[in-house]
Length: 59
Image 1 (cartoon, rainbow, N blue to C red):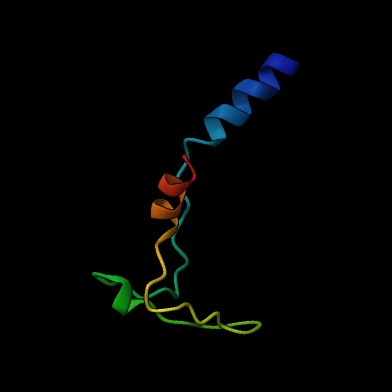
Image 2 (image 1 turned 180 degrees about the horizontal axis):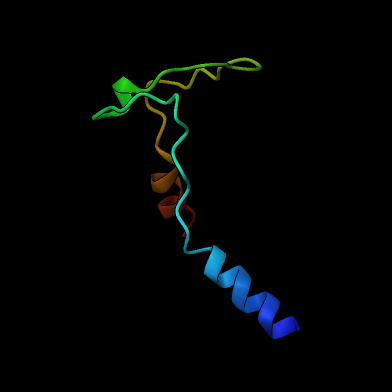
């Protein structure tokens, strides 16, 4: 039973997310529509590094 549950979980991981019908199609990030925001938006300094660059500095 445990093996069957693990096999099913692994199979479910391969199924892509189904797009929500009301989401408009777009070409890039500028085509995204913000439906709702919560909390405060963080303002980063102009010299802030993206997260993938930050990890390089930790090594």
